[in-house]
Length: 328
Image (cartoon, rainbow, N blue to C red; front, side, top):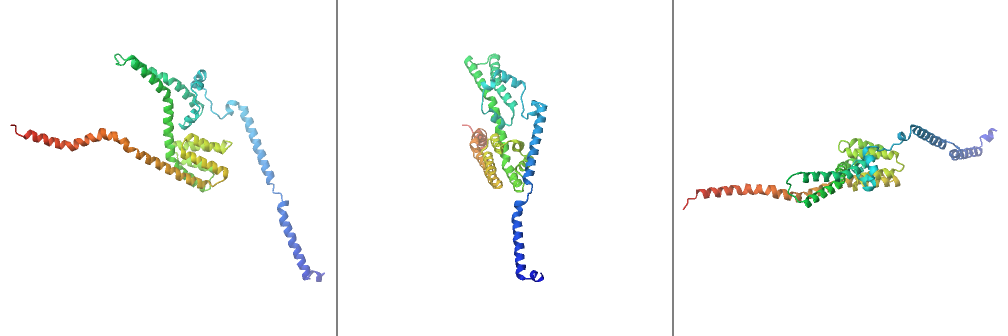
């Protein structure tokens, strides 16, 4: 027995057998082992579905009014619009987007817009008629007065649209002015390891001092990323509400990064540079349009004063010489 155990060939055979056995165990261990990951994921999914079912049941018990997150409009304007069917009479397919660009969201601003679009023409025409026909001795013919009333009626019809366009333009300018800096902050947050939702929420808190409108849009984007079924819809909603080419390109880049898995930091860096160049080109364009705008004020206000300053002493000197010249 001792001779067999001390035989080198037997020891080598035993060593080789041990190594083969260890190799087989190492290769077969991952296949034979059961980590329970699949079962844990399944239990988590079941628990999530159970919580959703309980939540839906609780909301259903509270009634339809409390279970809906969508705002409803039950005001006076809504009643008038529905009774007169102004939404069909004054139908505008882009009214929701226009109001969103001006910062008015929900069903109530839509009803208010249709109401004032119906009332304002009559109000403007009534004011013009009261001014023209109520003043004694106003030197205008009847046809001219009627033409002015019709013009006031037309202005009243387009007045709500002009107000919405002006509000949307001011809001867009405020957003675009702070958007490149917001992109730089977003790039820093993303490259530091934050998720895109947390980064956008952080940036919205930081840019509130410079642009409250941009902070509002970013907060709304964070909320839409949380509850919309497709994240692409959230980015498209941001582009639609702002209606600016730079922000649309950023939204497109973020959609592509979400879909194809491209690095978001590189896309944000490029988009921040492009938006900064857009802001600079807009400032240069405004500076280039300044000389033609100053032409009329210079002719009306500056040139007469300049002529007086230059020719005034000469005229006074000539007048003194003519007064001192002896007569005859």
